[in-house]
Length: 262
Image 1 (cartoon, rainbow, N blue to C red):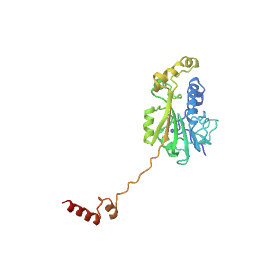
Image 2 (image 1 turned 90 degrees about the vertical axis):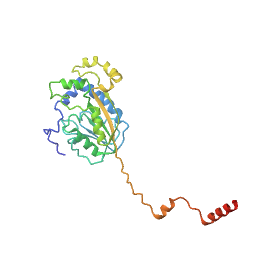
Image 3 (image 1 turned 120 degrees about the vertical axis):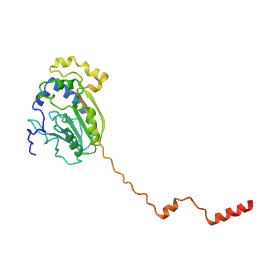
Image 4 (image 1 turned 60 degrees about the vertical axis):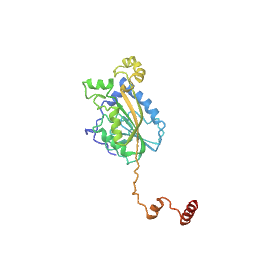
């Protein structure tokens, strides 16, 4: 497959993503997400699984599906199985059992189109797990105050969990579970992140929806149609539905019994 033109505006993976993953903030986020993905994909089965985006980290490593594919639009020297845009996936409709979207939506030009493509390639009852940055968090506040708009991850369009659930519902997905994490403020130095480690335990208890990142799991539902047939009935069927009529012998016996009583 020919690699797509990465200069296209709808392919906005930041050039400094690989460098950011090596920073204390990047290691802090990926360490939490690896733990969550490992737990969520461990018991998901099928034939084909695809991870779209952030292929620097293999979030399918703990999954037992035999065919696991890493899909991205650039390699940058790392192993990528399929080169493609998330908005035009080269997979057959209804052919994938599990799709992971780690931070693919907030850096896509048309995130709703990405979800439509995922819905198209998933089999009925297929699983989707999305990882994203939470706009209602210290990380979201840092994004609003960040002056360097071109630096990762602050240039992304953060999607709230509520908004993402609305989009998934329109595409016939049922949300199944998920969670928030990374409550410490986004600090550049490791020693400052270590000082705020207590916020992870406190955040899960006191402000659970204010984590810097979240994971959301959803299932593709296909509602079967039920044909409503007209209630046509034959003449014999209509007769059977009437009140039962006594036979002539029964009617004579009843009249005779009534005369004797008189």
